[in-house]
Image (cartoon, rainbow, N blue to C red; front, side, top):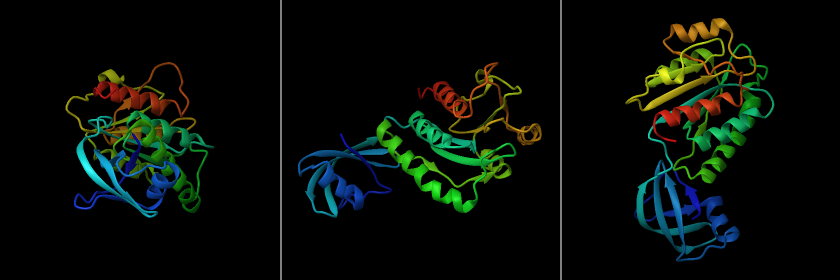
Length: 239
């Protein structure tokens, strides 16, 4: 069943407008009486098309329920900016795995250091990738790719979550030692090519963010966050 995302839904006169409405009528060639799903912040609304115009699709709400594909936790990925198009892959796959937000971070060893102006141009594409991945994986909300931040800002935001953690190739505890029971908000800090400078790692540790070690095998910066996200989803019974 086709899925469409809205920020909110007017239960008295539910409708889809804009490019999605055009897509429903022109590309999908859907007609009144056919069903579709509208996703609003983690809730799935099963709807029947009442009528279609070139600009609007009017709906009848048949039922609603929490999206079964949405995790019971909120995981924010703080990803140090990788080079080339690796962030696109990280965004796509982390959304499929259940990540709620991706925040690029500029750290000392980042090779890619786009200006605010240049990054703002890429941000729209990253969020389009997140939208496409959310539709493909049946998510009930669209994870956001946020503007890039520095490490200190990332640490501050991580400390607002119930369970922050940093992947560190130089050592740390195992994921099995991380206390996840009863935690609802998680944050994960992952380095770019070359990992973290020791002083940066110490800064995060001093702030109270535990270091997680993934073992002797060195994972690429586009592999590590996906492996870690999958482990967190498994530990919290979301995978």
